[in-house]
Image 1 (cartoon, rainbow, N blue to C red):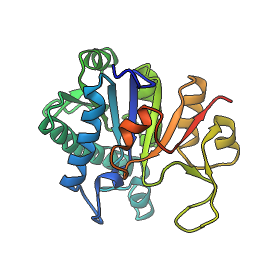
Image 2 (cartoon, one colour):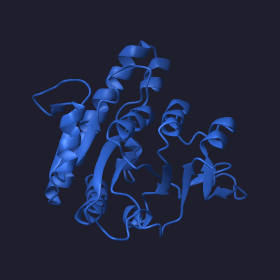
Image 3 (cartoon, one colour):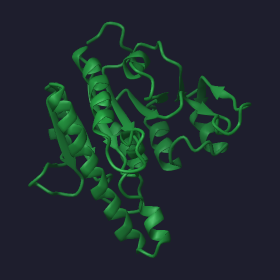
Length: 240
C-alpha cells in the first residue's frame, strides 16, 4: 500500500451527476475516463476500492414519483439506471488497466454478478475494484444508504463522497458567499442540524459502525489521491 495513505480499504460514493461532465443528461465518456484514471492512481498504490454510483444523471425516482409513477416502481427504475452507470465505469476502468467487477443487488447475471458479500470481499482482496450497483435492491432506500451499507459490509475504513464542492458548507457556497466550510464535523452535528451531507439513515449507519465520512471535490484533478494522503481540502465527519 502507498506508505502515505491513511486507509487500506475505502468505498467511494459518486453521484450520477458526477458522470455527466458538462452535459445536461447521460454519461460523459471523457468524465468517466478521468474518474477512472483517478481511481487507477490510488489503486496502483495498493488501495482497495469499492464504488457506489447514483443514477440521477439518467433517472430520478422521486421526480418520477411526482410525475405519477408509483414510488416502488420509480425506485426500481432508478436502480436500473445505477447499473448502466456501473457498466460505463467498469468499461472506463478496464480501459485504464484496472480489473473490475460489477455486482448488482438485483440479479441480472447476463451483464454482471449478483451481490454476494464474501465474493465481493474476495474480489477486493485480489486487488479488483468492485462496483456495487442497484442500490440495496429495495425501494425507499437511496444510493447513499446503499453506499453506507456496503462500506460496513466490506469493513471499509472510510466512506468517501465525491461531490462538486470541496466539503460540507453551512449553506450552498454557490448561492451564499458567506457560507462556512467545515474541516471536521461530528455525526451528531450533521444529523441535528440536518446538513444534508447524506441521508440520515446513511449517516446513522456510519456512526454506529464508527466509519468516517470524507466529503471532497471530484472536480479537482488528483483530488482522490490527495485526500487519501491527507493533503486535500475536505470535510471529515467522525466521532468527536
